[in-house]
Image (cartoon, rainbow, N blue to C red):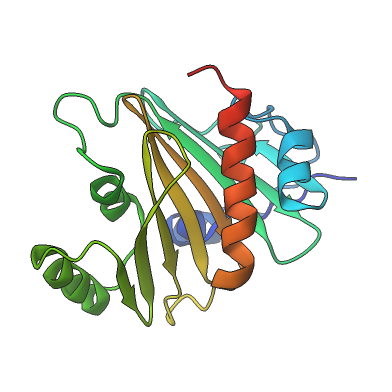
Length: 201
């Protein structure tokens, strides 16, 4: 099957202006494979065929430069689902985040009105946050510690979710985009378990 260019929500926002300013480009070759998870493992986890690999710069098959210590992969599917996986090395090292919750607050796009409410709840010691457009709850059984994040920003009209996992000093984000919370959570959980089990700690 030919490679199809479908981008995650956060990437779509960042790339919209750039893509509007350049002529259409046909991408025919597959991107480099993701070094964090094989396509077959991702497909088994989410229950369907996947297409993609490591995120590219959109114009060539060169991996996108996300800076030192960070790898971002994404996969398209035959349905509305997009799957993402990222790892940032030493994200919990000196000068980094201290918890998965703190890290999640830096990588998820939270609407300003929701962020104010989330910040207030966190300041009052509430760790399991449930508001209409954003959920942030502790999760067990993944890495050293983890949180589940689900957001449904009306301005985007595309829900996104994921587990943020601390494993040693590294941060993993196992994301699913385009599903309801009830659909997203089991797929993200299976995805996270499969990837973490396949890697040497």
